Length: 488
Picture 1 (cartoon, one colour):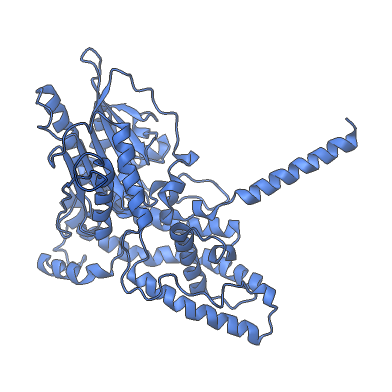
Picture 2 (cartoon, helix red, strand yellow):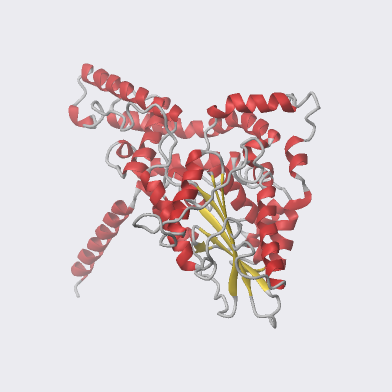
């Protein structure tokens, strides 16, 4: 082979690699917590080589904590998109008045109308979201057939959801998949099942973020600082997008267009409109800014963010202990709980994942056990493990499966942790996904139990420095202000 031929082949290879890199970028993988479950479920970051669970070990109980499926934009965001349509027409008119070459103006921009135009209510589970949870229910039953062979009873298969409709609708969709062909209703042989919810003002297991006064104060105080951290990214991207297209975009325009991109790409699979305003490097920066907000306000940025979720962690552990008690006492099938299935929000799944220490290395895990702060996720192009798209996409879930092993084995009970249905490393269990129950309790759960929920969330309420209203006023404040809150 001549040197000339070698160079030609090398150039061709480089060209192919370059084209593959350009074609390989899919904005749908970079939407933080607006990412669809089907896009996120099997990404490499989630996967480890799962433990070989001994064939003699059998699953005896399942805990599921899941986020609702894909939903429509909320009422407040619908108004923002309506306003954006008028603003885009204004920008195009201004560009035409300046005789800007038409090829610089994206063709869709001046005639765009919101796909949700005319809607006055939002935030509901959409059909794709229903299907996400329905299919998840089917897969869970197929994966753990012995757990779901019993006839349905609400005390055997407990299904709980928050009082937010998209969460309870997700629970229903999941249950329809889980119990499909198990009843006599309709051509799908469905069956009725119960979904229970606790009052929003007292649901410390699934809506602890709404019940924790100190967290609400922290979040309100921290949000302006988070906006400040994100501001340089928005300023930089606003300048570059405006220059590239010759349009007078403001920072608010770019913020709204990024929101639109996430909705179009995730809900509608449309990636050739608003998303094409941004380069891949700009998308990864915008994604990082969104993840930064999740980290600081919901995740490892403050120990209160996740320690207020301890009632949920305690509930998970209690259900395991009850399952072990039933097995040790040889209770007959159908007389004890085999699965506890919960459906909530990103504000639930992110803190719960943090309590388990997911997406941390061993040194970072030691820090959170000692309530020490972690460094912020590094800015691209540096890599990071904390990503909203993998930690809390629509339909995100953590499953904790309790296994019983032969009586002669020691230890006898193990917990396997699955994140989005895949084995995930537990730093508290030496980076394994299959952990002796006693180790799980001692190294993952117990260090979080030093603070009671009320001490964490409602301590010093009488101290004037905190300026918290009385409990009666707190309830009415919550009632009047709850409609303004947006759970993801």
